[in-house]
Length: 126
Image (cartoon, rainbow, N blue to C red; front, top):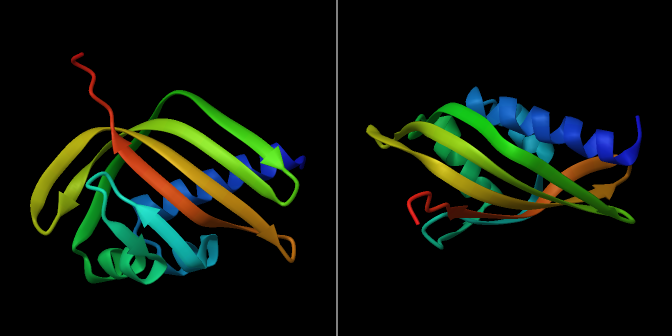
């Protein structure tokens, strides 16, 4: 499998882990030093992200890619930019929307992990 295909495969594994709140897989795919900036601008850690899934506070029902997923490799680092339709529940409240995601994957000891992620809401009306 070439490097871009490896990262794309990791992205697919991450999508499945998020949809099923698979905290074991999330633990494997997310770096211990993860920084995730969510759509509200809050800075979250790996522990924060996994805790939301483990507790059941976050339940993602839909993750549908819209348009092209752009993956670029820079040595032992890769960037991913994609737009996704997301729907689910957070603290028993329904949510949904279109979001642009940027992720930085780092390869260490033959394993790819997300070290940095950012999410922004996409305004489709203007």
